[in-house]
Length: 418
Image (cartoon, rainbow, N blue to C red; front, side):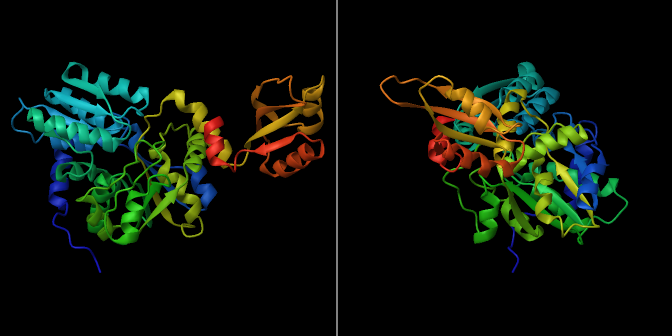
């Protein structure tokens, strides 16, 4: 039985939002990816919101909301991990309205710089809180005390209608039947808006929402039939990691979307690297969700027309090594050990020449010689050429009495030491 909603984004309101945004946002392209199409034996098209004016779709909802404010002397207040903040900052500058933007401490520096650049003298940025939810609470308190106008990143009618214009563009830009639509999901602003458009204009399309495994807020809501606040979330996918989805958004998504699928953060990292290497597209973790999930649906989408929304491209270059390492760990190519080297001359040389394979590479090494012990431990990170090389490596380490501990399968110890 379908959930009854008190609010549903009417098509006429979404079309009105599109008119409001016409001179402000880019009409981003829908491009076929030949590499993805070949890999999945289907027609894969990418809606390039990573190429939007603030490198994400968030400008749409933010501008549509802020443009509706009648009393321009009241300050706009918001909380955001980055993309919504950039949309609000750009809108404040464009419309000449003061803005105060709260951002969690985990926000990449690149996004903070972009917010300040887009907003210029019209916005004040306050870095506080460990998560989006922490910053949101601080922003709402500030807003109440200062009679501001709070611009929620997803739980707002005008924001939803602004984000929904992505769906209008996709329908306008495609002259073929869309069999599958993959939408990244955070709080539900984009997914509730776009899915509403498709249910009106392309009801045959199967709509799949995609969330990171470490923040399954919408997935859990679908599973239990009601919104549930998560106790803890993995903050890596900062653009799609919330503890609780929107009260407006959930029932709309539940009505319109066929399912919510989860993607491991490591898989996202591999997809980010793949999309850059094969397509020259720079994506942030949230922006890669819709493509990263395709492996799960490879049999289902064969010979079908598929559209994936790339929601954002605001990736900080300082995160490159972390993304690469998460990818290698996920692919089974990066492994960490406690290696017990005999404290004698030539032990390290023996390890390199006799234990490691020809293509194995030591990428991390911490060794402290303890003269009071016969054997000294070292923390060693090894990058393999193939994941099949792991078992032979461990066998040789044990045979030569170098093996101490394998850390990848001990998450508490692993996170403490690495």
